[in-house]
Length: 254
Length: 87
Image (cartoon, rainbow over all chains, first blue to last red; front, side, top):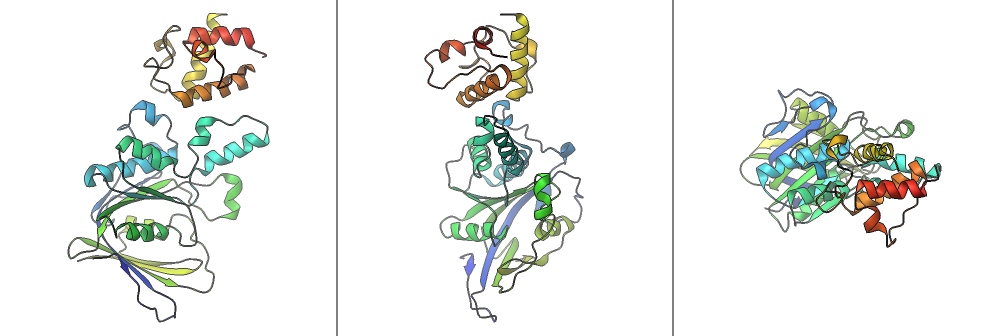
């Protein structure tokens, strides 16, 4: 079954429906989260003192991971262990913002750029580091923030699933550098979520998403995205109003 | 060139390259930095170049023919720094 459905919405524009089977999910956040009452079919990794455990990686790779990269790699690796190798979509609104702000600050003071810091701050660096460890030769896509927020990754995954049966989606964010915080309602925690998404079918946990076009501007989400809060609290349906769209989602048993 | 400089460089490498599982005493002054010694790679070589510039005012360029000799071991690196440092 294709993940895409695009009937006309009552509002006039095209409504887009996505349907996935959520085979497994794995979440880590830098502050303790309750492991009871969350969504089925997944797990919350130990907080580990605020730094995700990446001891599965050899030191020579591990030493280059930022706290954000550790979080993303930890959840992605757990899903990789359970779901095997598969194409992946990595999504982060702002990526390695702590690193690139430090570099800009250093450049303003006339310092030479750290080659390591620079090479690991590009938006696909975390996916690259994970791919090296996972020895994956499959397509990885990296997305940054846009008008669809984190839902852009679901759109991309649905597109990939026209060709492959299963895709891993990895989301990860961290607090922005302090000087930027007054301008954006970003997360106060570091967190990462990986999901193994198969095509929608007749069994298992079905994650359905509906995107409706929206004309007027809505306020950005503040703090952790509502989808993350829902996974943690076990809330099975919800919605999110974004700049140009209204997203609704629900998790149900087929 | 003093043992003190070798010791300073050891600390610089361990902290700057985040070799968190390695203790200063584990690093022999004559062991190879690359090729199976400390297991460093070409990005580390560039990073060491930046650290040496910041800390000692030593300029090392990526195309320098002497680089294999300079980076052969901690002792050879210390000898080069002692000779060319400006601070």
